Length: 256
Image (cartoon, rainbow, N blue to C red):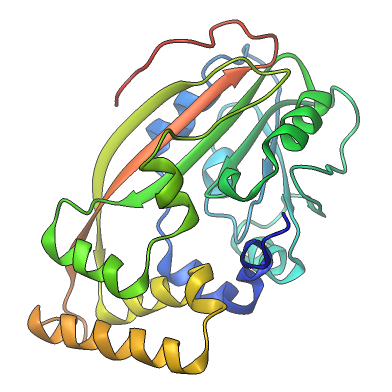
């Protein structure tokens, strides 16, 4: 994770927790579907404040560990999902034994990794037949005001990747199955500001640029008559991907 934006989120851990959406349970269940019944040892890598972790612990027979490079994000995670073991690490350097887990999942994180190194390291810690799952929530910019919001905040590395050819994996993985679902989240003006403040571009921007973003967001919200506790539905598209360690079941596409 050489990009400084990848490790910037701890500075806005509280905003990240308040502003970022959770994941649809159906998408998380789909990522873990290839696993056999019984104990499911799952590593949530790039776990952040626990947005994905809190769903993983609800999966049947799940034993979850959370890994992130940022201690401040993990401190938030321990408050949000008590009892889950946490470790400092990255997808390229995991504090896990060879073949130690049944699944590795990354939420809003794969676009930051070195694909070859991360694939190799995740392949090391997965048992044969284990699952690599990747998932992103992306705002649906087919809605005019959402598209204008992105123009104000700037697009993210994840959005740029997903609008192109999508995520890639390397040896020992051979391809990705896909799942897609649409949903929306009720957002107040304050939650939308928290969401913006949690984005890497905004965190690492100058004071002048952050002020510009807040000013233009407020002008947009005034147009939408979004004040106080009033809410507006923010549409999302969730895109999930999975691949199995031995390369089996590595083709095809599904939509949710």
